Length: 403
Image (cartoon, rainbow, N blue to C red; front, side):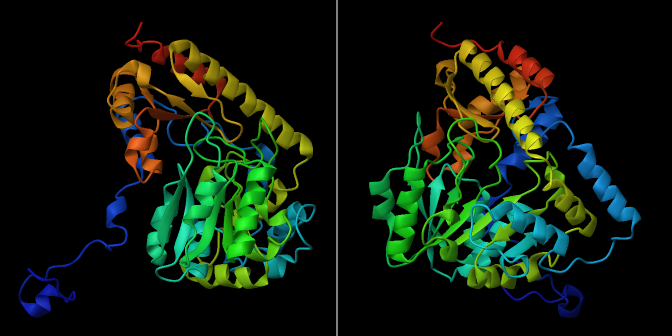
């Protein structure tokens, strides 16, 4: 039956065939994070899959949100963000970027996820091409589809997940409009070096590309140093810098993020943002402004805590027979599971959940060619130490096939 425009069946007297999926989104289905978390809940498995902490954020931030509610901050915030939060974000970036005017250069969004969508929808035209560095966060290709743009993939491969500058250069065509840079990188844990970022910056300058940088794990760096691409020569005017509150303050459910960019790019982001969410929850924005004023000791303690968790999980997995690719940043760890005999990452993760009681993510969800991740698995270590120890104890029931 041919598709017809939807009309009310009672007026037609016959049932109308209704298309229920936008063709652009139909290939993506449900996110791997939702699927794995649901399987983990059903099976009673320890969830080292989806990247949310099993502990709460700091009391001083929560109290600030409660105070804001009690003070009557229950109405719309300005679409670009509460002035107090805009100023706190600007203050955070002033040491590394050009002079920032929060009214002109900062846009508060409902998490970095919405900031990504607003950036893609705001700057891309249908049929534009965008370079994605894979393994890639699964929202990127879906957002490109919403914008009518298409991805070009630069694949990072284990064991070091290094950026290949010649391969990157070869991807650029007349249709290439932008590149998405996620550092620290989910899921590989890479922290891109100054040399790698300079390669990307040089490419952007020579080919007049926009850079969209996802920096939500910026405070979780264990080796190397986090550098913002926008701080490099000639990149302020062509970079949209994105980050959020959720990962740094263990409040992923609050969904407070932001985009920082020069005037023209900010106008592009806001053109989409105003019709996506209009504004983010007012009390949470106020609390976010308080959070960003935390002393440097808070961020150091966060890093030290995650470094300890990373080392605990990495050592335990290596002892059990995994080949561990030690992450330089983020709170994710990639490992090779091939010694355990499963045909691919999906089969291995399903066995972990059903037979071992531990959930992880199959990284094939992050590649356009699933075979690239056949032997890989991603674990999240944003859990308390007791949970990580219990997970390792359960994983000890695995037996490598070559032992």
